Structures are given as structure tokens and as C-alpha cells.
Image 1: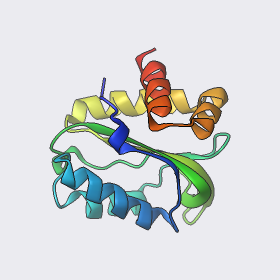
Image 2: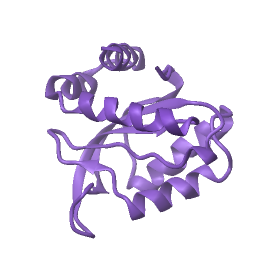
Image 3: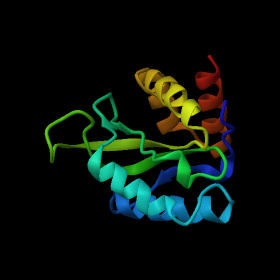
Image 4: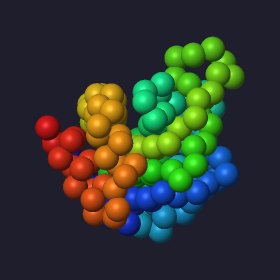
Length: 152
């Protein structure tokens, strides 16, 4: 299980678009020693080629990139004050959807990556879970909800 720390939780955050969100998250991950300098560019390139927006209630995206850009595991959770557009996973090129919650997966072990991604995708299909994150009052509330859901 990847540990979720309050410093990597952005509650009711405002970003103009996904690139601004990626830039901010990359700065914090780099400062915390979680990723290499190459991570942000790799994340943006992967998201452009393989969009991660999922058409679930509230709209959720799960951006991630290759483990070769990661130094240590992390999970970043972002609840947005206003939705931003992400490309829709599996849809026609250029299809977008409004996303209100973002889970950024930062996984160093390629074999653990798929397992954690699958577990996260199952969790976000629970509408009550996503609504709970959106209404959480503190980063610690989000941390507790995510930790409990992903441990189940």
C-alpha cells in the first residue's frame, strides 16, 4: 500500500488546467524527493498520448507515468474547486470530460503500478467515496478516507 501523506493532498484546489496542476504537483514531488526532474515532462507526454479521465460521477482522472521517472512511491490526491478538462480514457482522440478529483499515481515498481492502478480504478467507481472526498473538510479527512478505501 502506498502511503498517502497530507502534504500531497490538495483540497478544493484551483488550477486553470491540467498542465498547471501537473506543474504544481511536480514541484512538490520533486522537493519531497519522490520523482526525478524528468517526471513532469513524462507525465504530460503520457497524458497527451494516453488520457486518464474517467467518465464516473464527478469526473476523475488518474494521471501516471513510467516508473523510471520515480524515486519513491506516493499518491497525490487533488479535489478541485472548479472542474478542469482531461482527455477521456478510451474515447476518440480529442474527447474531453470535466474532472473534479485527480489521483496522481507515483509508483517506482513497475509491477506494483498495475495493481495499484486497478485498485484505484475500483475505488473511484464508488460514488459515495468520491462525494466524501469532495466534501472533506481537511487533508487528514481525505487521507483517512483514501487509506481506508484502498486498504479494503
